[in-house]
Amino acid sequence: MKKVVTFGEIMLRLSTERHLRFSQANSFLATYGGSEFNVAVSLSNFKINTEFVTSIPNNELGMRTLEEIRKKNVGSHFIQKQGKRLGVYYLETGAASRGSSVLYDREDSSFTTLKTGTIDWDTIFKNASWFHWSGISPGASEAVANVCLEAVKAAKKRGVKVSCDLNYRSKLWSYGKEPAEIMPELLRYNDLVLGDIDTACLMTGIDKINPDYSNTKALPQVYNYFLKHFPNIEFMATTLRYSVNASHQKIGGIFYDKNKAYIASQREVIPVVDRVGSGDAFMGGLIYGLIAKPYNFQYAIDFAAAACCLKHSISGDYNLVSVSEVENLILGNEAALVAR
Image 1: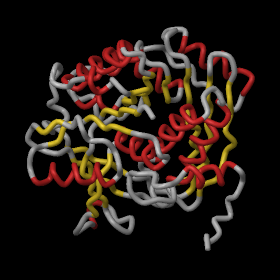
Image 2 (image 1 turned 90 degrees about the vertical axis):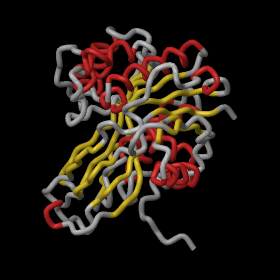
Image 3 (image 1 turned 60 degrees about the vertical axis):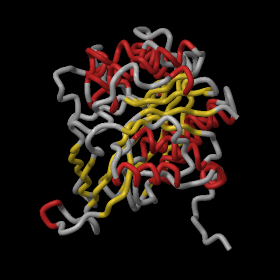
């Protein structure tokens, strides 16, 4: 089976426990995470061959991170060892009416100091069918934005499908460039984009339109408004997330193929154990659905939304569920009975 390649930063995640605030915490739970790695972990759990491309420091913490990647059965053959430090993010986990909060500490990390010309993309893509990146990476540093462009061009040259989760992070993009100066060129090499229309417009400098996703008849017009600027993009998907509060979410989704909008039914998710990584679970589920059943777009969006729902029940960044668990939820088996 050909592999899916993902490119991004894996970080040390330090979380407050028991929903404590930063000001209350005397200790932090140490795990790992990062959008593109989270997608790779999902796909690995779904028995898809994966390869994660990143950079880690050549020290004890870097080696522990490499162990983590291998523990999740994700390929690590092209990971660079260079730079001074591993990126870190701190998570204050919200509850009820108080939302979660994230603080990034990734400046001058091994990943953000990557340089063009140092990654052998031609070899990496030799046996690949899919390449995934997200808008987080080019937001981390201008150097990584240049590496992203190098990667998508190499993938396209080899006929590899390219997907992007827009993943706008307001706390990034601090190196003097706005997303609209970087993202349009990167998206010209993409086949699939995940994101809501307003975020897509913001990140590419297009006027926002405040779409009404409940008006299903108008959805083609909504998506075509954005896609006319990027005619190479074949598909666009949106995670529909309605937040009642930090402990109660409603999740659905839309997949658009430039002809028809496919809708995943909305599900209630309550209580939320951990919301972080749920968008990556959606992305991983969507890629899996498109690989497992090509052109069955209803299955793909149903699988993505169900995978996203299940991630809310799992602590940590990763969605540690199987294909059968996702498909059981699609079929309506939501009672969560004990499996004996």
